[in-house]
Length: 231
Image 1 (tube, one colour):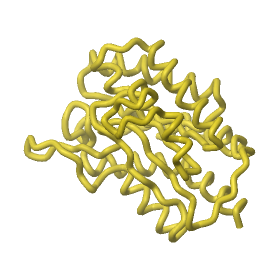
Image 2 (cartoon, helix red, strand yellow):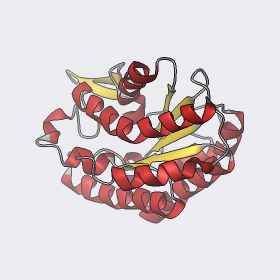
Image 3 (cartoon, one colour):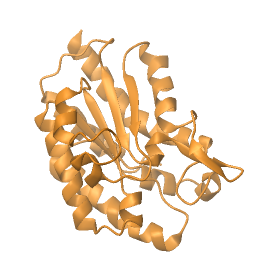
């Protein structure tokens, strides 16, 4: 189920050579991404952001283990792409990625895109270029970027195109030596995962909780290392 996570975790821990001084009260994780980061689900054909999302569940797991350590801020924006995050035109306030990073106190930034790249007819190369730019800028700002592949989609044709985007995220993680949470592989390996989707692209609360488990498997040892380093 946690396909691709173990090797990425080792890469992530080695990346912690960046200069970091973290105390439990200031270890901030910022979660960037699309509507599956924001936490949209559809209930009785009514779709919207729900409190039962992967970021909230991840925060609960971190709080249960570390108390006030590892605060997660949800900065997902529905309908957006990695290119828009970089340019600062994703309805988040008009700040380009490099400016946002310079004003951020986060130690870790998670990046979750791919679905809207498919629906916006971007090419895998465009997605690869955008995610490479995001990762390089985050590292240059002294933060640890953690990439996430998108969760799968129900439509087989769209999901096949999404798999091409997922391959680009994996490629960027490998080339840039940053941790990867392979949500696409992990969710796809679940029995009857399709039944846990609330619509064609958005998980239900139960699947968001599983996605948080996959996030935690990668982020937990990184947070532990950062907190230890800052103690």
